[in-house]
Image: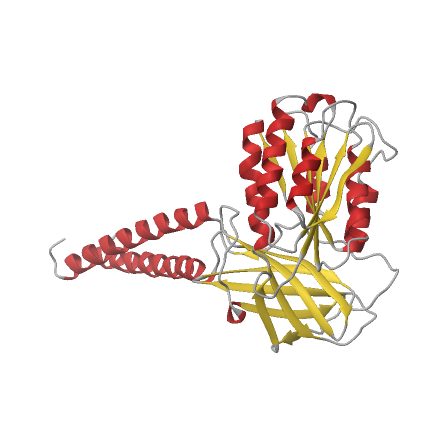
Length: 365
């Protein structure tokens, strides 16, 4: 190739690499890194006042605290239409700041396989969980083996909860789905709480009970705006089933390899529940199903979560919800590191091309 042709080819490569570098830089600066947003529930029981409860997590699953109204943006769209309504008049506060109380059902597997260290560590983890709740939050304790038992009804008295835990002993089979459904039904009767959740622990698979599949518990939870957090201990639980229970109700599933892992898991669940945000705004009644989008900006990162709901009481079944991790965001943390490395290589190559081109123009190369 002649020198002038080589020079032209060099400048074409330069232009191509410059374009690639611009695209990579845009991807890095405009997209989020591991940020996760969950639109947990929409409360339209007091229209025109509407509330949406939101969880914002970092790349390690820890809740992000201290967000303000300006960090949020929300919009609604009736399903199967192009009508997008951007909501500009709203407030966003932490649930603690706004005084949003929590009712939670703690469900413990007391089947025979939980005997010894598993049940002992579970009781410690549950006691620590309860100690992290706010004053006025209500807790119920249910345990299950061959049947489901309410060991303690909803109460703010932490002493009653600890006393109930002391009376839980391991024996019998595993009525897993019955336990999940019973906990959701109990929360449906709990009064004075705007947020409701179940934390269910098991070390095995469903072996007995009147329910043979998790569907009834999931549907009941969706109708009642109850989130299910599930914890699978050891290698025997059907994690795919537990993920279905949590994923379809905007909760989370956790895997505990050993009983000693339970304490950290229950601490993480408590932190997530105590660091939700509530967005309040006005909207009219509407018989149509809508999709609500909540977008969060945090530093140079952003992500958005979605939830389908109907802004009017109805017996119609709710539309399917996306899994809680189906947020729209940028590349993961590992992807962003890889992009950074690639960006650095592009800069080095561009620098080399510029030097070579300059030398050739001077007749040195």
